[in-house]
Image (cartoon, rainbow, N blue to C red; front, side):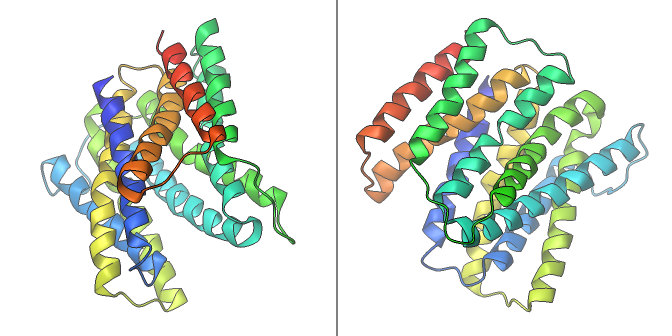
Amino acid sequence: MLYLLLAILSSMLITVFMRLSERYRKNPTSMLAMNYLMCSILGILFTGEFQLFPKAEGLGTTLLLGSVCGALFLGSFLLLQWNVSRNGVVLPATFMKLGVLVPTVLSILIFGEKPGELQLIGIAAAVAAILLIQGRGQKEEGGSTAGLVILLLAGGLSDSMSKVYEELGSASLSDHYLLYTFLVALILCVALCIVRKQTLCWQDAIFGLLIGVPNYCSARFLLLSLNSVPAVVAYPSFSVGTIVLVTIAGMVFFGEKLSRRKWAAMAIILAALVLLNL
């Protein structure tokens, strides 16, 4: 459970640093590339040796799953950008968070996890709270429902990769799995920056490197948490737990105020967390 709590805390810090960067960043894609660079550096450090392809059983699977996850990471970000331009901010944010349904359902249908009745109620409560806290998002003219569904699936699949690796990958190569994930995301993101002819300024570099630290930690701690916490508990708890901490951080650091609807959503989230962990 400690690893799950650390993953939630790290995820909250990503949002806080992203919020701080809004006034200073010039090119979001360049900042994202620097984020992946920091994640890759941390990935190298945590492997304990600079050996990109160690001679170990399961290396091929690790490389394949890491590459898929890295592509999904960047793809989800690009889909989010595209959906925000088509559908506004609220609906894409809601669908991105609802992506938690994908790894939860996969864990039940494919990996045979069986949540109890109280945990099922907790999952339903978590989804209801996500919908409530996001409010009534209005799709802009020319918006795309299909794009929102694809965003949900892509975000959910990228989250699911931790569970997929925990089931199919080698535990001894988990650090290399994360390294491959972020290296692939870095390579693809740099290529995208070149295609878009985006330059790198010092603001993008600093905030990108800063965001990369909790980003790597979040992925690492979530992967570690799945060794002791069932995925049907870990993923919904990770999602709504992050919402709680982000909301608190918004109130404390940015002076945000909660509406009655969001207070009600927070109460539902706390109840969901209790039910999920019973």
